[in-house]
Length: 299
Image (cartoon, rainbow, N blue to C red; front, side, top):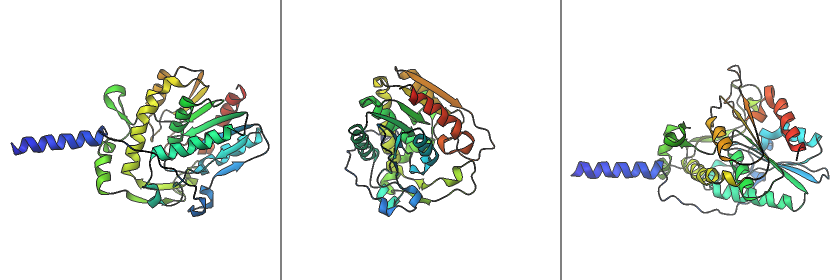
């Protein structure tokens, strides 16, 4: 009898953690705190030059706007005003970061987007990784002039439905989060062992169980609403992406019903990085920005 109860308890805990049973969260209003950035390069990139069209660039998890430095200059040269904001609690202190969640980050970036629409005739959106998921959600609920995603996730672990598993260990993230807010957490100002521009990566390192669970939970509604996107969409993904499986782009292709374009890259093994934050990488960023600019020009 005791063994049966124990097995039931273990099964419940596993399902509670892996399926996020009874999970819920509410957004809290965040305040910008860029004076606390651990590096000046983490701060927002804002370029205003009197244009009537703007590009909003949304960074990933757990990185910073530094990933868009080249892309911002290219959009500036094309005459766009550029906004690559630092989402509050990123790029500052991970102790503050672990007190927040995806819903709060998204509420902040959505408000940022809506404010831009009050000042510009057209607002375009580019998002990488988690920022790509946010860009999709903006497109699901609003009408940007066009949207570009780079390595965007719409599922995390979906073995039975999609044969996609990003990380088996994430099935235990929620239960781990009960005992600790982070594992091996810290800041990263560079990655000298990397190459191709990725050595300039800045953000947090470590595992953040509650924030990871928050992202996974929110991806469910983003995927569910992909059919609500009615603005032009360009999805870019590397086939060897080691952070967000390429199968995510296949889901976006299958479940969106809008004017879409898809770019599949395939970077070689000489590139010592995750093949994920593509607009950072010197070997490919120019080619991709040419295609993004051409896509925006159509709209």
